[in-house]
Image (cartoon, rainbow, N blue to C red):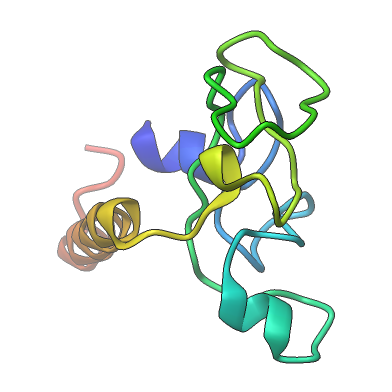
Length: 107
């Protein structure tokens, strides 16, 4: 269910992993993605997700805790690429991949 949430089964409908799904972040707070001269961000990176604290001072379309997200490269409070949530996401997705190789789904 954690992977489902990250991949778009959430109140915003965003897949919080860049380059995946039909609605994913196009403007993350990630300097390499901004500076590379390519329209799309580096794929496969997890952004922070909803943050009602809005510490970055940016405008958010919604303020409810589950929907306080904006796809804005200046909105570091919700849209930053950071190792402290990308590392657990890698662990999660690799664990799911391993379980799939064991054939444990549907049992």
